Length: 240
Image (cartoon, rainbow, N blue to C red; front, side, top):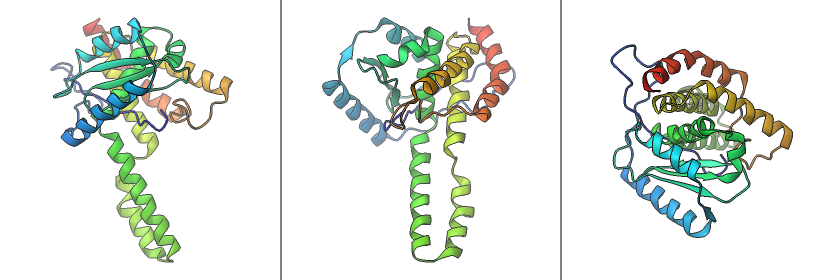
């Protein structure tokens, strides 16, 4: 995503068989953040061009059924922008730009996008990003003041405990993969989507203000998706 940090959703544990390789339980959602998310979404809807899109509504409704997001007032809205983008906000608010639909290609591809965004929300990734930004600011200020010993302390004791952007994206990839499998979408389609995602980005030379630029897909992320794919396939086969 761009300046709209994608957020995520929550899911019930799949079954009493093998435990999930990733923690798909949602983190507690702060009531203030939910209220802010609802207010922000209302603002976007009042000022952005909304269009009717049956695919977004259909896929959103299907995912909603398998995600346990307490007190969520779900909304899946399509905005008429050509920029490939999607986002989710606390409270079950999801926005999809029509420009990302050709990259999604099918319902499973779209489920990959939406589930990934919701996963950011359910795992409170926006707070991780905020904490990292604050810690980096502290480091910069300490460097300016010449307090290099304190810089190393902050790096070792604070930054090391905060997930990196890549780690955040990997978790959203994996949690989203289980969400879509639970909803009956073939998780193998997620791998195909992310590959199309990279191809599109490379062909267009997208700027850093776009969804695709802020979701870099490196070999590590792809390897992690393949790592959890066998489990996701088992979930999918139980719910197809």
